[in-house]
Length: 202
Image (cartoon, rainbow, N blue to C red; front, side):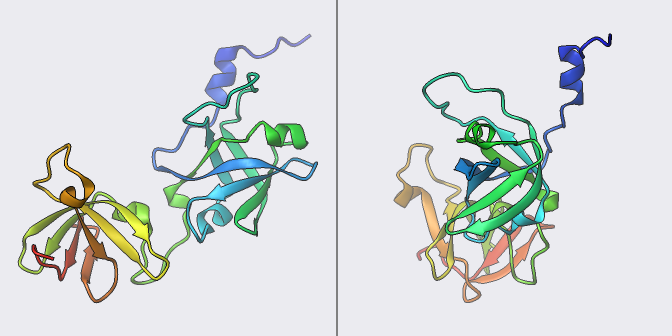
């Protein structure tokens, strides 16, 4: 009779978490009785979830109260994913039945950045802009992109001022620059910089 694999062997077979993994959503519950589950995507257009067949999971940052749940699978091999109202409904080979789907609730969903679909000219993923230096036409450093805000009409760069104190209030520590052609001259990933038409006194 064959011996069961040791824990070390099982762990060695676990898929490696991608170095370029990006958190793109979280599981919010089961869908139906066959094992489908709902994901709340962080992006308004969740194309990354639709384009990748390998989703990686991590436990919630704040564990849910109640009985201890079974360990999450590290990798889900996606069989199908589609939009459903404000969520993405997916099924995976590793998730069979409603109970298994419910056990995923709260899990954080990651996808390799390399799996994201290619964007067109003058289109960018938010994650690629965060950390870029922002410089105006006079060569003056305005700060570093820390986040973006979606206003519905367009996105706005949140740029932390280079001279901001660590405990400064947001209105003193950052600049808000609309991410529109009127103010954005170039996005240069090679130089890790965004050139803007923006003054120090704006």
